Amino acid sequence: MQSLPKAELPFQLFKRGKVRDVFEVDGRLLIVSSDRISAFDFILPSLIPGKGRILNRIAAFWFERTKDLIPNHVLSAEPEKLPEFKAYAPILEQRSLLARKLDAFPVEAIVRAYLVGSGWNTYRGQGAICGVELPRGLGYGARLPQAIFTPTTKADKGHDEDITLDQLAERLGRDTADQLRELSLKLFAFASAYALERGIIIADSKFEFGRDEQGKIVVIDEIFTPDSSRFWKLADYRPGQEPPSLDKQYVRNHLLASSWDQRSAPPALPHDVITATAEKYGEIFRILTGRQP
Image (cartoon, rainbow, N blue to C red):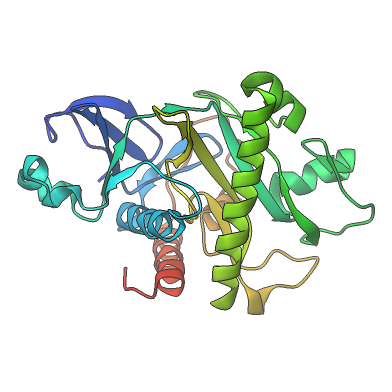
C-alpha cells in the first residue's frame, strides 16, 4: 500500500506524510500507516511488506503502556471496529489509529543514550550535541553518562536543524521547553528499562508532542517504533562499533554504501534489502510486544 488515494477512503485528507496518510473525520484524525519507507528526506520507491501494520501496532502498544506516564492522542487503536469505519476494515485493520486533533509543537524531541549517527558527527566537531556538553574522548558508539535531550526543528521540506534547549525555550517558552525535556527523558527511561529486560538497547528515539484543549502536553504521532528509534540487541553491542540494527538504520546504511548522491531521485531497494528490512521490523515487534507481526 504505497498510498491511500482519497477515492479509497471517503474522508477529508488532512495530511499525507512520508509514511502515514492522515484523514480528518468529525474533528478527529484517522491515521493510516502505509508500507512506504523514507530515508534522508526522500520517500523511497520500494515498499516494505507489512511495515505499516507493524508501525501502527507497535506505536499502539507503547501508547497503551505509557499512558499513565503522559497522556497521548489515541482515541481508538481499532477504529475499524467503530460503526463509521467498519466498511473500510480491509484498509484500516491493524494499520490505523483514531486520534484527537491537537496543536502540535513544530519540533522533534530527541533523546540520545549512545553516541552514533548525526550525534556522533556533531560531537566530533563541537564536543557537544544541541548545546549539551559531553566528556572529551568518547568513542563511536559510546554509551553516554546519561541520556540527553537534543531537540530539532521540524521542517515540512528539507532537513531538520539541531537547536539548544535555550533556543527551544525562545520558540515555545521556558516552561514548555522544560516540560518537553522532562517528559521526553521520562518516556525514554521507562521504555529503555522495559526493552533492556528483553535484551534490547534503545540507542536513541524521537517524539512529537502537542497541547490539548486544557493546555496539557500530550504525546502524539508515534513512539518507539523502528522508524523513530534505534534498536540494538544487547548481546551485539560493542563500543566502537555499530551493532546490527532492528530498525530503519539498516536501509540508511544500504543507501550510504550505494552510489546514490542523496540529491537525485532515490533508487529502488534490492529484493534482499526489502526482505531483510521486513524481517528486522518483525523481529523487534516480536521481542518488544511478545506478539506475532
